[in-house]
Each structure stands twice: as C-alpha cells, then as structure tokens.
Image 1 (tube, rainbow, N blue to C red):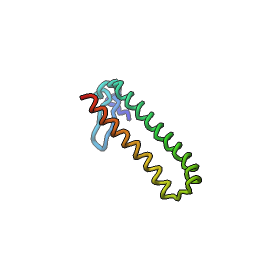
Image 2 (image 1 turned 180 degrees about the vertical axis):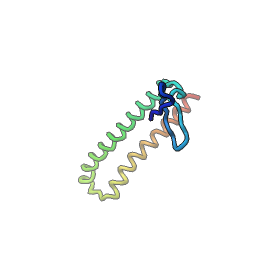
Image 3 (image 1 turned 30 degrees about the vertical axis):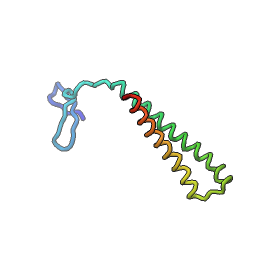
Image 4 (image 1 turned 45 degrees about the horizontal axis):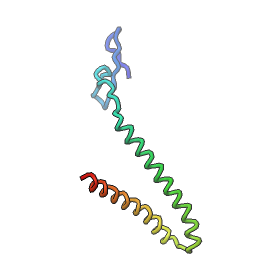
Length: 103
C-alpha cells in the first residue's frame, strides 16, 4: 500500500492490523541465507525422495509376497510396518555407533 505523506514525497508503508504501520525504509537489510540452510534443505529433499522410493519398492514387492505366501491384509500391514520400523532401528543403531566411535 502506498500512502502519500506530502505532495512531493511518497513513502511505502506496510499495514499490519488496524493501527500498526511499518515503513519500508525501516526494514532491516536482507540477511544472506547461510549455506547450512541449503545443505539441510538438500538432505531433507533427498530423504523425502528416498522414503517415497522405498515405499514404492515395498508396494511392488507386496504383490509378489501376497500371491506367493497368500497373505491377508493384516500380514501385509505387518510386513510394511516392520520394514519402516527396521529402518528407524537401523538409524538408532547408526547414531549409537557414531557416538561410541567419536568418544
């Protein structure tokens, strides 16, 4: 929103709520994003892709497992949950081994 302060000068202002006004010239300069944030974003995105890939692989394998072992839906759910739970336990084991090796 632009408000005219006088006839010759216009000041850009951002209105928050009813009475709070923050002038654009009072805003701090842009702070550069640290590289650490980009690294975290990259690894988060890779983790999301890997989780999706893992889920797709499990879904594809469940077709063969269901037909070969004649599994009902409860056993299928148990197998999928076990694979995801084992991934979590592997991460916990990895963290623990890293702490032991670093001490």
